[in-house]
Length: 108
Length: 140
Ligand SMILES: Nc1ncnc2c1ncn2[C@@H]1O[C@H](COP(=O)(O)OP(=O)(O)OP(=O)(O)O)[C@@H](O)[C@H]1O
Ligand SMILES: [Mg+2]
Image (cartoon, rainbow over all chains, first blue to last red):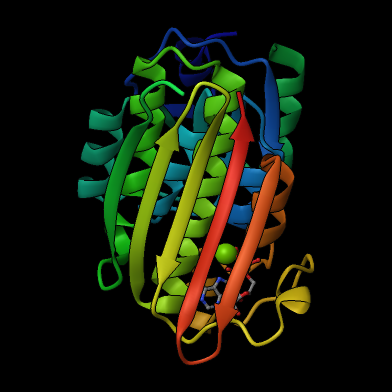
C-alpha cells in the first residue's frame, strides 16, 4: 500500500504528503527515538505520539515511508513546513497505535 | 592511496531544534557519491546518535567525516564534561539525560549501543572535564 492510499483510508488523514507514492511494507511503533533508530527499517510506517522536530530527522535517517501520528497528535505549522521541505510524509489518526497497526496489518 | 573526501561540521550545542543537521547532510552527500543505501543508513544513524549526544550531553562539538575507497570514518569531538565510566555508558538503557530531554523522546540509553551496532569499528576516548572524542568506521 502507498502512503497516499493510507492517508485516504477511513480514520486517517494526511498531514504532509511530500513523497506520497512511497510504498509501506512494514510497521514500527515507538516513541523513544534511539529505539526507533535502532529498530525501524526502510519502508516502515512509523507510528508514534511524538511530535517534536526531531522526529523528522529520525524518519529521514531510518528511511521510514511515513510517520503516523497516533491518538490525535498534531504537528505545529513550522514542523509541517520542515517535513514538506525534507520530503517526509506524515499522516494522523485518532486511533491508538494498536488500532493503527491492526489496520495496517490488514492493508499492506 | 587515492584522494580522501572530507566533510567538516560545527555542531551547535544551543540549538536543539536543528540538532541532527550534519547527519542529514552527510546522508545527502553519500547518496550523491553513489554509496550503497544500507551503508548510508548505518553511517548516518550512527553519526546522528553521536551528534545528538554532543548536543545533549556536551554542549556541542565538531564532526569530521572522511570517505575513502574502503571505509567511511566519522570523528566526533567535543569539549564537554567527558564520560567517567565508558563501559557503563555503553550499556543499553544507561542514560543521564535530564527530564526535559526525555520528554522529547531521547534518553533511552540506546544511542551509544546503536553506534556500536551500526559501525564496524568504534573507539571512545574521554577524559572527565576535558571532553570526548568518538571515532567510528563503516567499511564500504
Ligand atoms: N559526548 C558525550 N559527552 C558526555 N557524556 C556523554 C556523551 N555521549 C554520551 N554520554 C553519556 O553516556 C550516556 C549514554 O549515552 P547514550 O547515547 O547511549 O544514551 P542517551 O543519550 O542518554 O539516550 P538516547 O541516546 O537513547 O537518547 C549518556 O546519558 C551520557 O551520560
Ligand atoms: Mg544518546
